[in-house]
Image (cartoon, rainbow, N blue to C red):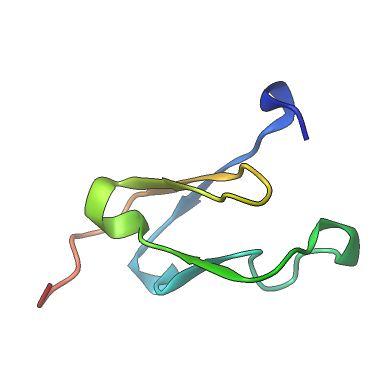
Length: 63
């Protein structure tokens, strides 16, 4: 996937712990599951497919 085709996905606290690929991803879009810490920086980039996740939720409590 080239940079101009990279996806951006907004996630909330309900999506934590976040992993890519997301549940329900089509078989052709699957790769090994990787957990991403999107809440700390407000964003995370999947090292496999380049999908950028943007966190739009409240800061997690207790960490």
